[in-house]
Image (cartoon, rainbow, N blue to C red):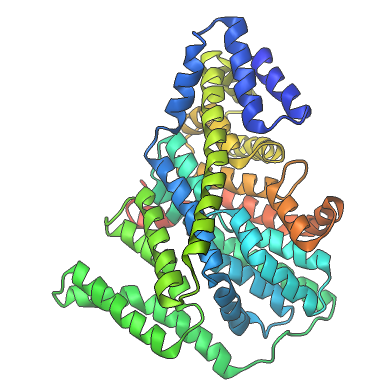
Amino acid sequence: MLLLLGGFLILMLLGVPVAIAMAASSLLYILVSGVTPDVTLAQRMIAGVESFPLLAVPFFILAGNLMNIAGVTGRIYKFAVALVGWMRGGLGHVNIIGSVIFSGMSGTAIADAAGLGTIEIKAMKDHGYSTEFSVGVTAASATLGPIIPPSLPFVIYGMMANVSIGALFLGGVIPGIVMTLLMMATVTYFAHKNKWGSDTPFSWPQLGSAGLEIAIVLAFPMAIWLMVLAGMSVNMAVVIGLGTLLIIDWYFDFSAVMALMAPVILIGGMTLGWFTPTEAAVAAVIWSLFLGLVRYRTMTFRTVAKATFDTIETTASVLFIVTAASIFAWLLTVSQAAQMLSDWMLSITHNKWVFLALANVLILFVGCFIDTTAAITILVPILLPIVLKLGIDPIHFGLIMTLNLMIGLLHPPLGMVLFVLARVAKLSVERTTVAILPWLVPLMLALIAITYIPDLTLWLPKYMGLSK
């Protein structure tokens, strides 16, 4: 265990990329211990990415990239301004609502920070907000990306823990709402403290238009249900509903109706059994292409090609981490390191609530040093047996793990959201870190609520019949 973990930590401290550090320490352990033939390294690494759920990774990444180049981010921002821009600290609320909507399409915190963050930070600075406040609220709202479905970390966790990815997606809805409300309350606090006003004048027509867009999206599944009750087939009802929606959207040129429809289509399609959560990623790509090439006509084949190559690059790095982490996690199990760590934690407590507190500290610490994908791949084999032994629902634990790792993305030394926003805002990493600190309060409150009120996560999957 010391050789495996020690080698990994030393390489990390030397600045070696996390995937290479895991692969090298694994190879060193195999060569020195002789526990298995060295060819096992290649076999286990290949097996680590030979998984159907992992097909969702490149497609969700591609969907996020396509949404960015299709100009959907600008429409989402315009819609959010109409909805909440009139409130005190308006653009802070706009930032959060924009992230909620974009989360329903991208599935990653980094895509949210890099896509919407560029627009939001510039707009907030132009309206007189400090760069620090703009960066802080953008960083905090970016954590919503993997909590509100769809979510790449949920795909990885579901594969590792062998639990329903659809149930994980549904489990993130209510926690996402809780996080949104806590962040908006924080913006309200800063607005009153600094005596900020609104950023756009209150307008009934604008607010009514935004409310109408939400009402149209919410009415869509209700209309489908009524047509089915009237004797129409589900497929025909959906075709008629989408066709009517497209005509209405084209005629009135709404800002974000079609963008708001993305999570409705994905969750609705999974609920109706049209596609699995993995195939939902392909549906997200098709919807993105439809919006960019047909509805808004903002894409060109050149920009689609660029988004594709960006996706290939990002996917390669993510799956390299997965494949290196898979052999590392397997060796942790083979060497009994995972069992020893599990026994040590159980020697401290058999109370599941105390365990969850310790697990939060551990995952949050790991998330500050290791990439999200690698952290999930390493920690699930160690912690999941304890989770099951203590009677904790693995779907509930998946939300806890993901939120901890999202908070870790905001911290040095390896917080990717931190570095993305430092580059976008042209701030030093030190100033960006200080700007984010106040926003840890609502995030930690959300983490405590999600940890100790399991029904926040489990009620919706149980109601939809995807969890016991």
